[in-house]
Length: 415
Image 1 (tube, helix red, strand yellow):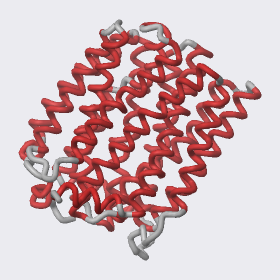
Image 2 (tube, helix red, strand yellow; image 1 turned 60 degrees about the horizontal axis):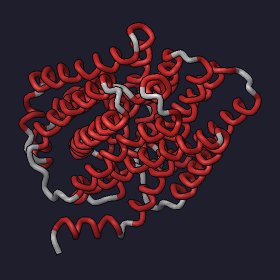
Image 3 (tube, helix red, strand yellow; image 1 turned 90 degrees about the horizontal axis):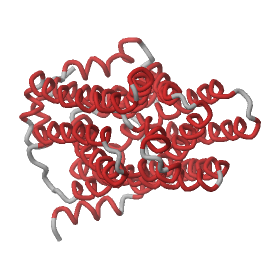
């Protein structure tokens, strides 16, 4: 039996890890269905790309306001229960959206207010999902666990939009019913997770402790570089929020095509994640991360200029595959470089770059699209991503030089 096979077997027989994968999958499927349904509904209602940007902003604002609190909570209290409560709130959000849909009351402003609640739940869930993984798998299989977890996450991002697009074409109501059922399943699987999934601490909440995640990231250049480049690259390269415009007006493929387009990044990422999980000892991880981010930017440029559906789909698949490699490397670097007693607070900082930056990137794209047009907004974002890669390679040379994940421990500053 090879070393990779032994690590795979270790993860497969880890009950908490499997339950975590199911929980994360059901959550992501629900979130993706809601995102597709709300984006399509709002754009058909107003035909204004800026409203699509507001959808992203409504979900990003809670992350910006609460991520420090979320980090402290996850270092102080049970990370599993945070996941449970977050999924319950997601379920309540679906019920509220159904109420708006049935009553036609409140319009876009009410939907945006509901999405703020949705954003609060996502802030705590994503931070908890990052912080809890090192608690349920051994350190020697952690990089493989990240790869499998990311693959399953991307598979859910593939399945969710596809289901959402089909359901929208058939019945808008059922998109929300299925999303709600998915969140209900996430609640059930997270409840039955077991074990001590929190760091024991009796420290009371102070400003210094809340901000300590920032301090740790700022004093460790490898972590700072990994966290910040994702924030900037995704902020500039956000494209997913504008897909309803491409589906409706540019490629003219309707809600079915929208579902397929939203699924393509997940397809590329899923297969790339499976490939990464087979690598026992990844090498040249630093330079690989930067190269894949450059490819990420190139795929955005191709997608922005394409008027052929299949070319657009290929570009989106490359977009997802390249992002998968960089996310895998960044997540592993940050988690291995962070002590468990600070993992919640550092994960909270990291969650802004990995998750919330997507919504902020959608707002950036929507804002630019309303002023300059959809295609120029996406194109300029892709070009800017190239520039960011070059700048960050100059600013963080130690990050470029990292060959293996073991190297990161030698470049960490104690705080």
